[in-house]
Amino acid sequence: MRMKAEALVNKYVLKDSLKRHLFAVEEAMGFYAKKFGEDEEYWRITGLLHDFDYEQFPEQHPLKGMEILKEGGFPDEMIEAIGGHADCTGISRTTLLAKTLYAVDELSGFVMAVAYVRPSRLLGDIPVKSVRKKLKDKAFA
Image (cartoon, rainbow, N blue to C red):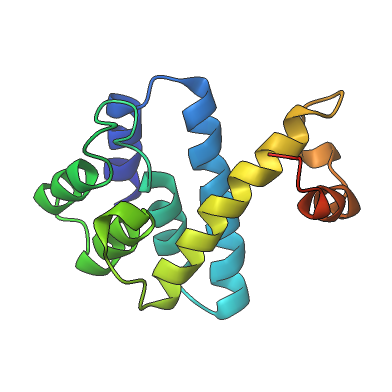
């Protein structure tokens, strides 16, 4: 499944900024899978694929991605979680996987914005206290 997921990312994602976002969400999903005692690889792949269709099909995202994943034989639970990460689909987030993906996707964008305003622009250089401080700043992001 990992190889199929990477092939989809390589086929549909051209922009480095979107790839960085996918990798950030993948990493965070792996962290939470461990924390919750879930299948780390499965959760990581879900994070990696959640926006793979966005660049090529922005108006149909994530529905087009769900269709591509279904045709590729990816698990229904994964596809539903990916569909549920976008409010526009109306798909309920009923599983821990879906709820975590939604939260991680939202928060990763915020953390990336915090990194962007730092001199190094590196995620690894962001202290947790900086993220917390920016969360309280209504004028930020």
